[in-house]
Image 1 (cartoon, helix red, strand yellow):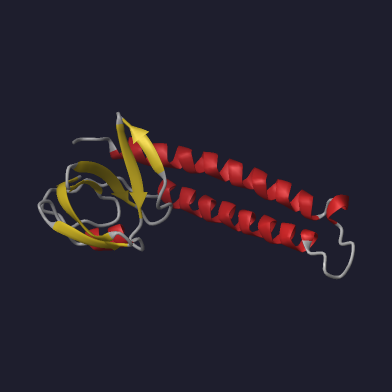
Image 2 (tube, rainbow, N blue to C red; image 1 turned 90 degrees about the horizontal axis):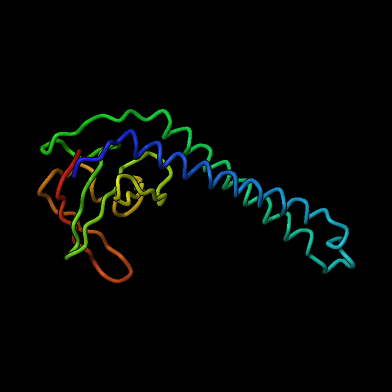
Length: 161
């Protein structure tokens, strides 16, 4: 597998930009709903306005988190890794679990974001995720054990670039 890492980073940033736009729009709509006349409390037990403001605040915070991830990916260098190099931030890793092959890019933020590049789906993984933490320091040919609610999964590191 040889995928241009710069293209992967650009695709992940484009996906994050879409998510930022959507979350910002949802936060604005929720903020408008919180102050809408229909949501004004009818009595001291009526919490519609308060609940709508909590939703708006949560969505605005999520939009800010996405913006930070977008900026971090924009400043990330696309350095090349050799097969014997230890996996670290910036490594594009091809994994096999049983018969399933997957590709992930270890990034400082924006974990879970997926993008299709050159016909391959690449998932952003952070070091704080179980998979990202298990991959750190490994190299090609090593195995990563990841505990999941369904039990421990073992991933073989097929390639690192």
